[in-house]
Image 1 (cartoon, helix red, strand yellow):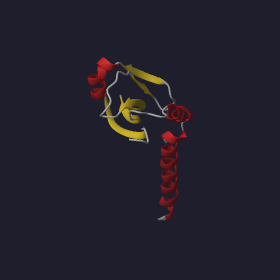
Image 2 (cartoon, helix red, strand yellow):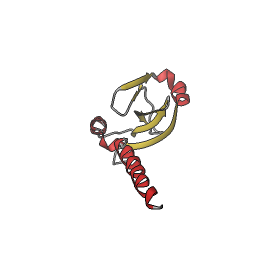
Image 3 (cartoon, helix red, strand yellow):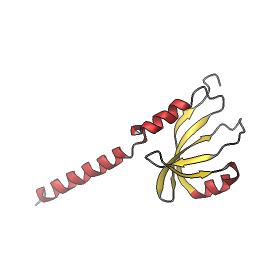
Image 4 (tube, rainbow, N blue to C red):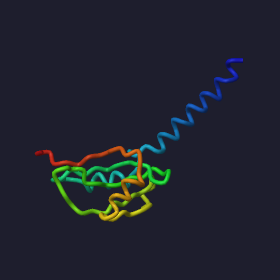
Length: 112
């Protein structure tokens, strides 16, 4: 009787592992391009993973508290396609619209 549950349980575990692996941001070539574009950052910039309208999105933000700047926030999905662009004046709307923020990469000047 116990063996009847073993195979479905193993299949479920394999499915979950495979699904999680597919959503791994480290597997995305566009993300490597983003990381490559963030070099010699005098002000810290971060690639952030978040949830927007129940979809995982990514964006670059200046996260250095000692720097002030103007930027647009381009949210892209797991395929690197633009989902939405928030202008600097829409910062409050961005903060209200996204949840589950996680910094997945930081670029900062090594001299700091």
